[in-house]
Picture 1 (tube, one colour):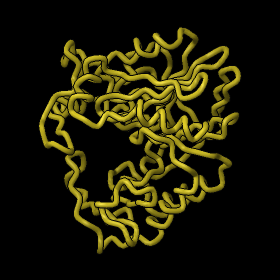
Picture 2 (tube, one colour):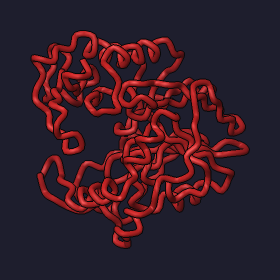
Picture 3 (cartoon, helix red, strand yellow):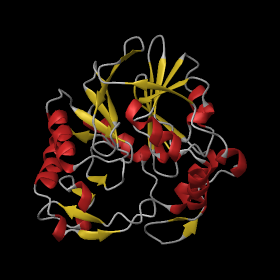
Length: 309
């Protein structure tokens, strides 16, 4: 992808204002074709999914919270036979599973997590949070739920037909080949898809500049560092992350590694998560950076509990 293409996609994918977000909530999913057969699907909750359309088949990587009609958004792009794959089992990546009749491919280690995060109480809590979304800039509260949202149907929807996937499994779509790579850390069953022909890596939440490593399903820090080293050894040009609208250059991996290897839990800033209230997590930021540098390309932090150090 050329540099000017990145600039154009940034203009199309960013939705920074309250008005933009409310507009997206009305149409719900925004679909942008980044290159022939490769689409990014954005949602008001700032979760990005990826749709690959080959000559014979298509593949959807992650299903988000599933508040809107994701299936319809996919159908507007392609009617080819579809694979659906989850990067990991968390609620913001799997709650749209129920909209698809197809099998949902997910690493076997995250199947119990996916089931737990699609339970009624988890779904209801997510919907309530979506109803009270807060704009980061204006601090104004608004709802990102679509107007026809049926909460009871949503809470009872389930997690789809889960099917285990593992390292080395390949999805051949016809001209697009996607290989499963295991990247434990954020969860034990986190995976990436490697787009062989374009040397692009789709990592979900497995590796990013603000990595959460404090929940019961997370691995120890040492295993996450092994994952970073594994990613360093992959021949890729850019990676796509689930909560970042733009691709990230491979060179940024060294910043993630630095943050992890030099991590000092005692010097971290306190962090409270409503999902894991007893975690006693801390934000451990790479030396020389603060949260004010969050948007810098060399910013990196690990949010970690003492038990995971």
